[in-house]
Length: 107
Image: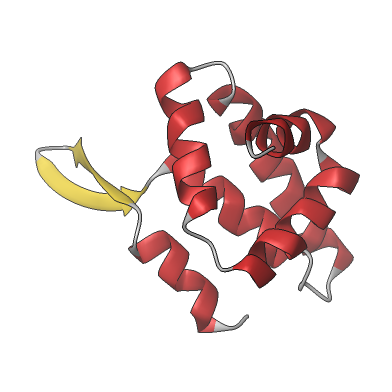
């Protein structure tokens, strides 16, 4: 998988404390969008399906929380246009709920 997509995760981090350690982890919104984007590039159907399922599960959770919904749009806005087109194509096939949210908010 091309490393260029990792920049999405690196540019959108949050701090989490685990067992007394502070870790930088990807924002859930960035993780979800990243999973959808790379799923379209996976040659292995099983890995592609796993990426989509993971992204859908977390994405639907995000849609239930206002601050995370805002973050989802913020991360989406920061994507290059080519990535946005690829993402919307995947979302249209994989999760109409997330597609509709992003698509309606961006009109």
